[in-house]
Image (cartoon, rainbow, N blue to C red; front, side, top):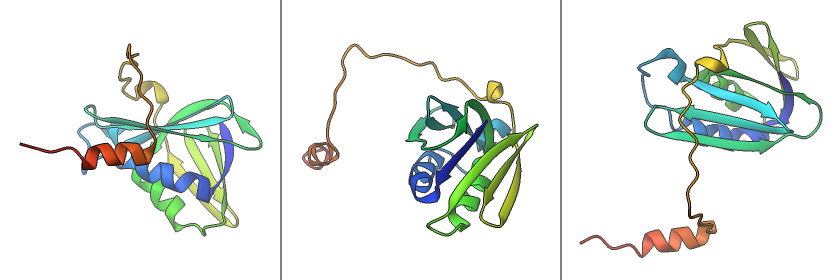
Length: 145
């Protein structure tokens, strides 16, 4: 597994997904983020077994498909600490992930993607699509009795 991405394209979705993880996870794998690359899309998944958040980012340039889990907090801290215009390269080497940007190098321990909890995918019979502004308006107009 390998991909390169601009920090500016990665940081916001990464922060949103990491929000699903609470303080201290009950299982070590729940402190990890599932990273999956396929068809030039990076999917980031986090769960606490009650809530699952998935964020997808389109990759530009070279990538190798695959999936792995990385420590969410450490990965987020590394990405936050890099300059805004950084290009981040992510390479899986054995059971470790190398995160590189400029002269910075980081190595993170991984856990297998197979160990990550699979919350069943379900398909709704009804699909609703709203813009962000429409959803916000609906929420604001909701009254509680």
